[in-house]
Amino acid sequence: MITQQQELQQAFKERMNYDDLINCARCGFCLPTCPTYTQTNRNEAASPRGRIALIKGVVDGIIEPDEDFEKQLNFCLGCRACEPVCPSGVNYGHILEEARDIINSKKKHSLPVKTVRHLIFDQLFPNQSRMRGLNGLLWFYQQSGLQKVAQKSGILKVLPENLRMMERVLPDIPSPKEMKNRPTHLLPEETKKKKVAFFSGCLMDTMFMKTNDATLKLLQKAGCEIVIPEGQNCCGALHGHSGEKSTAKEMAKKNIKAFEDLEVDYIVLNAGGCGAFLVDYGHLLKDEPEWAGRAKAFSQKVKDISEVLVELEFHKKDLKLPAQTITYQDSCHLRNVMKTEAAPRTLLKSIKGAVFVEMKHADHCCGSAGIYNIVQKDMSMQILDYKMSHVKDVDPKVVVTANPGCLLQMKLGIEREGLSKEMRAVHIVDLLLEAIS
Ligand code: SF4
Ligand code: SF4
Image (spheres, rainbow, N blue to C red):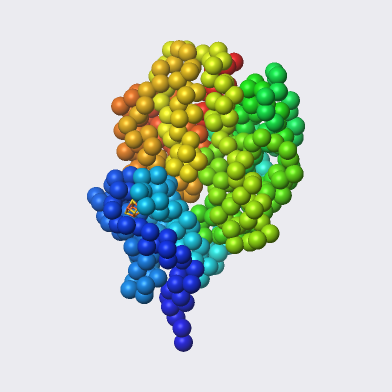
């Protein structure tokens, strides 16, 4: 009888693209960029080269796909910092996604894990009205005074430390009414320069709705007519990175349908993690002839807000803030996949009064990485503490980010260091709106 491990090994042989694996020349150029490699005192198995070798070993039948193998894949942040530096052009992100999906498709999860995964991946994220419902509960928790009572009573001590910290850095949640009444069409404030569609996202249009509103305002000020199609849903990144590829594909198809008939110049968004997944829809659906071309056409239109603002010369407007030092923490996916690193810096450097100071290793992951800071808490906090040491060297008043996960993680870092009176973390569009106002 074939064992579960043999079945898994067979799936690796059948599904992994062998050319991708042998494309790795084992040069090691990627090693210094990898946070899990550097933070584990150069453990080869925790490096991109090591993980590719492990996967190849499984495909070749030399290594068994056991628990240690799976742990090493889960230990990866998926930050993709190893890709831009790779001279052989290895697409590590695609290799990792496929490997995780294979493992998940063959894994027999325990009943509680299965239930939690079902609730999160199938019931919550694909359904925006449920996302609103959950955020409505959080709004009630904040507004009713329950949050203060819970914080004072010490009852939150039952939560694991990182969740307890997360609770303290939650943004102000909008009311259920505000979350429901979302705009669908907006006109530019000045001469129309572009017509764009806005990808509103799941968390961004609930928990971070104020940042979405700021984004729309900036686009209007930059001269954009904006359409916000109602049929869109979550981008599917969380699913794609967690071995739930088939649900990710369904969500991608729904988004493609929602946007494809709109005659717009760009599909704009403000979250690097979602953007990187949207620009990869072409790859996600490459094996489905009905969708491959449509997915590619969709992806080609996707642009981060900072790119669009720079193209429309927003940085030449009168942007001002009181005198202060600001620094920027790259969103890994915005930088490594969407290749957007200059535009946010151009915008920040154009704010009069503020002094932009680049922090060391701004391009290294902050340890947020989707739900990594919850499921791999120790490594995530180790990476965050290292990141905060560089933040403290700059001693800024504001740490700017371009992705909701990074924003929460930087807030968490500031809280952990006891620096919340000295500095704050903000999304770039919120700071730009302050500067133009
Ligand atoms: S840089 Fe690319 S080719 Fe070199 S070891 Fe890393 S993944 Fe392999
Ligand atoms: S994705 Fe990030 S953590 Fe994973 S191997 Fe590449 S650099 Fe390392």
